[in-house]
Length: 437
Image 1: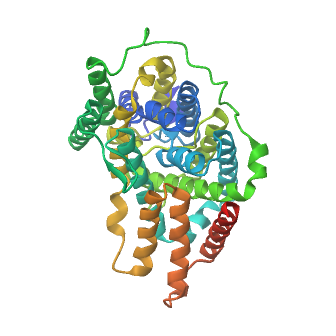
Image 2 (image 1 turned 60 degrees about the vertical axis):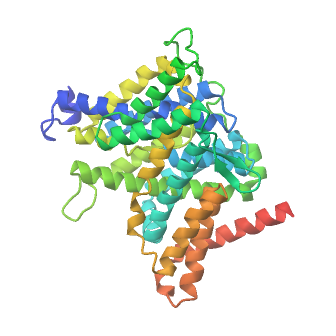
Image 3 (image 1 turned 135 degrees about the vertical axis):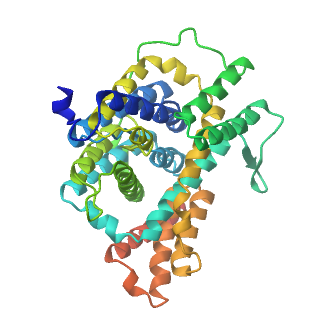
């Protein structure tokens, strides 16, 4: 039956190889079960319910991916999108998590329609490569910044905004130790380095008495009721001019995150044709789009194809059977909520910092000596960080790209869609300015 479903022989793999690959990918992805609820709970969402939503989003999204595309890709809530959801939309913009969830659902529907009508490729082609890279870099910096804050390695300062945390605090030292440990394990290609580092810090915290063990490490899955279909469309429509830029930003992050990840994983797995195009890309993108919409319904930020799937591909995973194993393991993790819930913020902080580092890799492709390319990227990066808003960072990056190209005689470099998006961002600034005046 497995041969018929997944075509193992055709893909030159075996059940044993696929199971091992699935286990490997799950180990590298499992940190999301602590990190995602930790991030989203800062928006006011209940941790335990988000844990269940996260596990189910991973389980169902990966199942859709494995049966629709027969590719060894795991799905989970995207690290950039969950940070954007909580820290930009809910905290910085003051929007309730229920409205943010409604916006996420609308974005998912748009994402699905764009995929159905094949508009997704047009959007991807319309955004300059430098700004695509800027999105990844900016989110990486933002996530790392959040990690440093969660570990109290940096703290607030009234005069300089931020400063170094208290190095006499053992929890701060544990966070720093976690960063170093994960970096060493990752560099030495240890499978599951993120989750090993996260739980090592947690175990040390238990030994030092900073964290107390729950009465039971196994339990029935926490109720999904507080968050499932927790949309507030009423308030969303009341403040639609404030929400539209949020949806646009979510869409950009989702589109470029998913496409970049897909190309990277397909290249690693050997799924490119003679022209360099991804084989069966339409099936993968369809599965990805369905999973995106599903996440909001369950009560979590948008799921995406996880780049950590590369670890299972490295172990020989080539079919949806790898994904089936990943999904089953996420299903089993539903009964381990107490274990993932006891992980403190300073134990997940190192993961955020290292994920941020990994997202910085494309920065070497930017030509900063060309100000018409370098300035928009720089503004996107620095303003995402300093305004604590991915939306504001993207807005300055997109608008500055159009303006500087227009006034330096490089009008031909500006796709028509860039004018439209830039105008929308300018309208966003005008509306926000008037609302605060």
